[in-house]
Image (tube, rainbow, N blue to C red):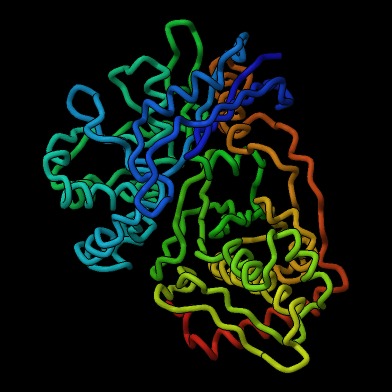
Length: 485
């Protein structure tokens, strides 16, 4: 038996799990919040963060001898965080993190500069969005030209943390998963597009070497092996153990649907972001802007204080919500691409104008919107035999009651856990096993899957598909041709 650790450096905290290399059993855990940063003017999460805050949080989470006996560490971190470095390896400015809305104009600028959405989809498998590093480079070039000129190397959050753990060696590395989200690396070709870095930043910059899923980034002077690391999305998928035939629906304020696939998908509409996973496969992702924010909006409208109360109310209704159909495009929508639209409530009749029916319609509308996203993947040949449902809202009875029939497949709701940290630990175990000659570089350690509840469509499948068809009918009447490329 060996011992490995996986750390997840999210936007708000660092969580560490220490695991047995053979079974994946969690032996001990550590947690620490990130130091408080100044909020943005709107009161939201800051867009600029000193990367040293990540190290301080990591050190606190690992305190008390948590890492004693650990032989290897894997690093998962928030995606889309851009860390620009100067020629001495120092940060040029604070890291630009998360969905940085400052770069929305820069995203549109880049799309036009390369010749449109199709050109970007063909080049790197995704269309520039405000959150992506390539778009943040364009913003930096236009808004902080002095900092742009000083920038000679580019890293993401997990790249930077791995580099720091190794003592800032000359060699800087990343993995396929992290690289595929930058907007200047193609999952299809497996290579960088330096010309896109130059298009955005105004000049070339050093990019980290992309190493294989089971490769080690290096070893510390104390002999601790550090694996390649990856982004949170890829680490969570690896921690869940998803494979061919599996899809994951993530229920946050916004939503996402991803699935393991054997090849990169080029989507001219830009709805699919073609990412690489942490195992050597591909991870196409479709995102919606409105998921749990739909439920929160409905709860506020009905004067309810929490989503549990909204779920309880919705369970008093029946499938189809007495004819109410809710298109949940409350903040515009990305899938379909309707950035300036609004939500729609259709089917109002005297008998349907009750609180429980509106609550049910909110849940069904949110899930139907995500089913639309799932259909984008299915329409491109992605097989889906079971669907993992993640997020606190996945525990709500109204979600569990409606999801199997609306998605038309088996629903798996894993026990809550930090799957990104578990995925990072599994990657560390893989790299350690390969280095010791006990594991095949092509096959990760066969850790046991998560404890989960399983829900089948059952006899309600026909009813659920009728509800879904009514939703599609209202969507087509309101936004005809919204899903045409």
